[in-house]
Length: 197
Image 1 (cartoon, rainbow, N blue to C red):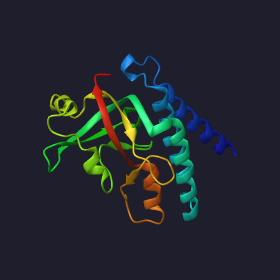
Image 2: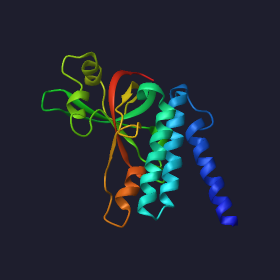
Image 3: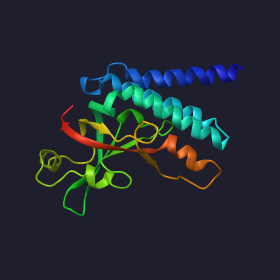
Image 4: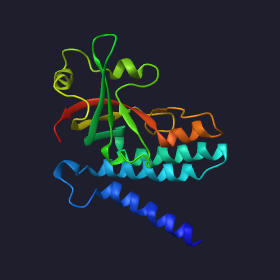
């Protein structure tokens, strides 16, 4: 019982740090309310998923996370000025860019590790690619992996109304693929703006 209370307090402290940021945070570390809410729901549902053992409960948990993330984002699943770290720029077959972003609040490997990128399953990849000659293309030419940036855009909706994502299967243990959806989701986004934080 005492161990459960201690674990619960540790989870609350981790969520508070994700939402509020470290003491003495710089202006560049201050994030929009929607990003703080998104962070908290990502970590909260990951903690719940780590304790889950029944396959069918993962489906219910995923639906609950979809609803919580949609609420954090609001209408159109849009986001404005989220603070990300640029992790990769990859050329598309058409000469454009696919870009990957990480939220710096999730640098600790004990936390969830969501990745955000302008791609995704099916047609999303071609719809979301940053095309040559566009304003975003010119901005990205001057950036390199590791740069912190403020990114705006929107998530693509899935069948549950939450953001579309894929997940890497980390291993083949029972329920590992289901847990990967909570540990390391890859969210598909359409980027509309990139600027310094």
